[in-house]
Length: 75
Image (cartoon, rainbow, N blue to C red; front, side, top):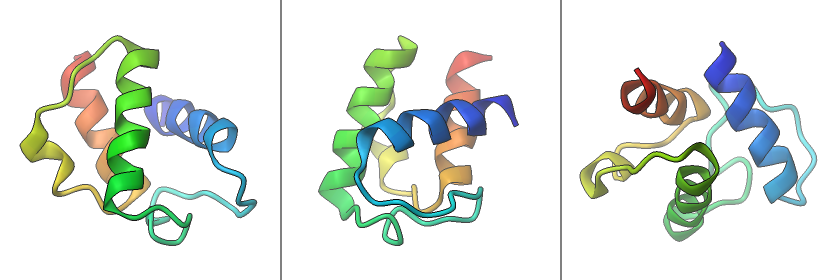
């Protein structure tokens, strides 16, 4: 849950769209296309000091997907 809150906080700072962000919220619902997700992931990498593998970014659809990947890199 801590990772989700970190991502949620970063998202709220990064996008202009106001909506309730839950684990099952999709990036599409937030107005991000695949390029937007990659751009967001790059910023998150920098903020958290991690590096995603390119193939991981193809499978990200929801905030939970992103949190799961972040958890794998932090642990």
